[in-house]
Image 1 (cartoon, one colour):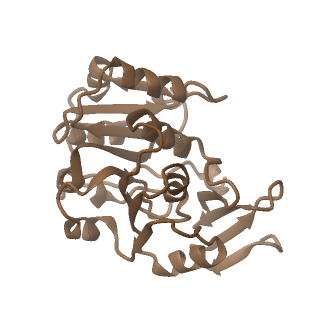
Image 2 (cartoon, one colour):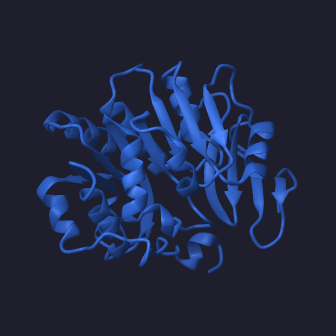
Image 3 (cartoon, helix red, strand yellow):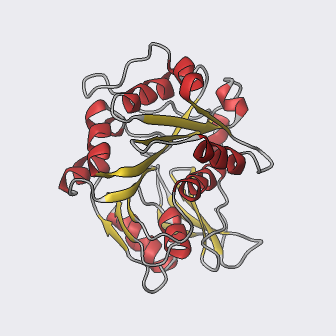
Length: 283
């Protein structure tokens, strides 16, 4: 444990806030040994995690610059994406479903939100909190929720995806962050569930993850909005810029990946695969 770390909880699943030694305004939130959030208080558009940048890319590719949004976030942690939306689209109204009220209080005390942020955090998990949201309330829904290092099983079933669909406006966009390893059996089942609910589904991931060479994040996108070639091209262009570019799959290429996978149901739901021990510092 570093002397400058701020500890919320010790024990088996510690919660620790680690200052970035290279930037006085930035902090890493680590939960249960997993890096959950990176927050730069002076620059909320600085997104350290690649998958978070890919979700931001999705937002910028799907909504015109500066447009205010009504957004729902399932999973809060350091509130990185809500901060990004508040900074880039002032006046946006955002609801965050985060069951760990103690964590939220810790984050808001140590990493305060800016004035006029428009972010409301509800101390409830996604599956319990979604039914309380009105139909067609959101332009954007982001599911980025983890129990430890795994996506909870109840958030990716047919019933859960139907609820996520319900709260979206007809032209709204859903983004999901999941983690998986080859042959991507978990992701294929989540994609199958999305295809049963939405008219358009896509995926962003590093080529090495798609090819089964490494464990990694995959950002799934779903919408009922007709997406022309331009929208996919904008997203692919953004995703392909970083040093470790992501590929974008949709249409026939995505159908080939999904194959005959079946959606998860509440009866056979599974969490996402656990990461290798070396990624958790256990190797």
